[in-house]
Image (tube, rainbow, N blue to C red; front, side, top):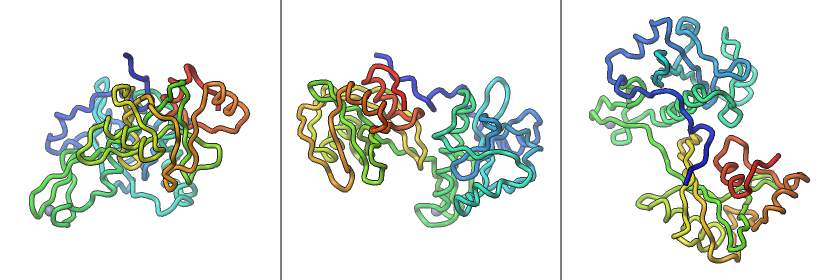
Length: 305
Ligand SMILES: [Zn+2]
């Protein structure tokens, strides 16, 4: 069974993890004219003309970089990310571009670029998001040091090493015995916006167990465990999720919402989805998301809107 062809899951570079331990790797690569540097500010990447900006090291040497990360290699070119301090607020990000850096700052949701740039950007965003909130040792509270070209944080007090984390989350297209799709709305979402269910995998839990538990908790629906099928995965580093996509069959149809998590939930036929999307009453997740891919796989084609 082929899995979904998902955005952000088509990296075209080699992470070259074996190079991370080379002493002084980042400094050496910053002296090489052929190195290319992607610049990040918070979770946004510098872009020019709808493409990820890839600078020669000298062109960004003046920036106040917080952390450099080694992203990997492609076709003999080494790639680094230069992570700038997070802007104080959204207006700052929009109004004060970095001096001498004439770029746009683009978030992942709207990043529509070739696979190489997409893969580099999502790796850089995910790693930078981890650094942003893991500045101190979880054992003793000492400020940690970045080592291994950005892939480890080391505690100088107790010698412990800390590695980037990824939090698995399941996202599932649940259908009823009539092949209707369950679409729900979160309480903070705009009216009309719907998606498939999703939730974090809990400690000690398998993925299939998480699909069954989350579906039961959020809408009171029983899933046939034997029907659960893996469809693909997508990194979603806000802050550190790995979305694992499934489809599964419900054995019950009566929806009982968990009110603080689900504002609305209903079963939709394909005709109902097509009509509601066409007349603007139903808003679906963005094209880059695995949620959208799961919905369109069920629908049997792409949906406008
Ligand atoms: Zn420590």
